[in-house]
Amino acid sequence: MSSTCLIRVASHRVRGINLYTMKPFQVSSLLITGAVLVLSMLVGCGPSNGDLKTVDYTPLPGDDWKVSTPIEQGLDPELVEELYQNAAELETLYGLLVIKNGYLVAEDYFNEGAVERKNQLQSITKSYTSALVGIALDQGCLSSVDQKMMEFFPEVAGQLDDPRKEQISIREMLQMRSGYPWEETDPALFEALLSANYLSLIDGFPLTRDPGTEFQYSGLTSHWLGVIVARACDTDLKSFAEEHLFSPLEAELGDDWIKNSDGYYIGLAGMYVTARDMAKLGYLYLNDGQYEGKQVLSPDWIKDSLQRYSEGVNVSGWFPGITSRYGYFHDLGYGYQWWSGKAGDHYFNYASGHGGQLIVLLDDLDMIIVTASDPFWQQHDDQSWTHESAIIELVGKFIRSLPTE
Image (cartoon, rainbow, N blue to C red; front, top):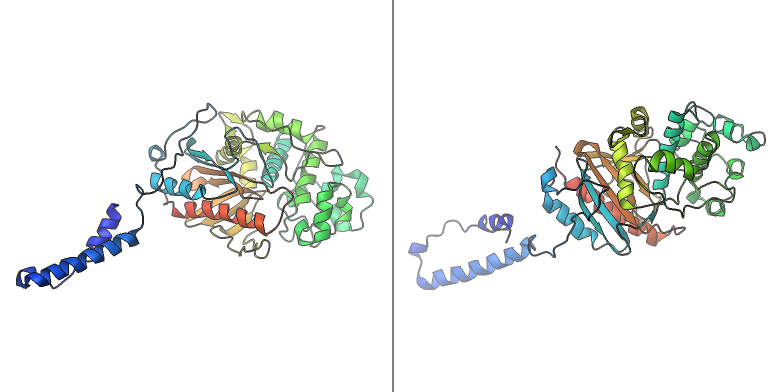
């Protein structure tokens, strides 16, 4: 029995009774009543940690992360135990990692997951694309985030029906404030997104807001950012990513990342990365762009990327069953292809992908949380959103339970 439960039982004392003045049958009756009361209270206490099925979240062998334990890094192991107990109940979660103070302190894989599995990433790819824009600036391929989108699409620039598109900047694209709509708001737009003929959609998709005025999530905008990097740096996006991002992180990018019909790697989704390597991107952003003594991204880019350019983003109505608080994630904001939010007393930044893929950065705790999951590729229905929500609830509840430091 836990000490907390014992305290709860002991606190329910019977006051005002003197056993020495009671008759024997009264004492017996009192003892029986007390025993029943104690047993009923014990049931209410629920199972203690010792009663629960043991989970093993010990990090697996490997030389790509320094390993430690939660308690050695100042993290309550009971909270971690509960996190992994709950994780084991989820049908579409593939992997769950917790990194604290630069150490991998908890790791486990579920369902189809495995440490070596390169997971197909959904919109977490957007956060990688954002990093590649920052590297292109550092490399001198791009001169400024204020360069106009149409500088890089001359074949389209002279054919635009909407002159506002000439004014869209890379900065506004990064912030999801280009004016292009979220494709899933309209079946025709979503069908066009699935067609993978993306360059023609620069003109074909209508603007539903003036550029720079309002947050609107747009997958195509992220893809066009990737095309801009490829064209500005005279390479393909995968080669550029491998040389300038994955190699410095000692990470691997899977070979299954596909190109669209225009011949460009899809910058909005489709990368293949292990959960451990996903965590390395989080580590990079949590440490001002440095990894193992190498400055992979500039500190200014990290700062700019994790700022909130849109406050109070309301996702109510985006997904079935999701409220504006998005469960335990609330006070949502958006940076350069990175989300931000709050759970409990903790603010955090995070990369997010359909199905419940997450890279969460808790700067105040020096902590990274990674989830890998079923990507539900091209499946955007009640079932997929429900499973995604369950994983977000899992992580949000854990964050909310963490004390401040």
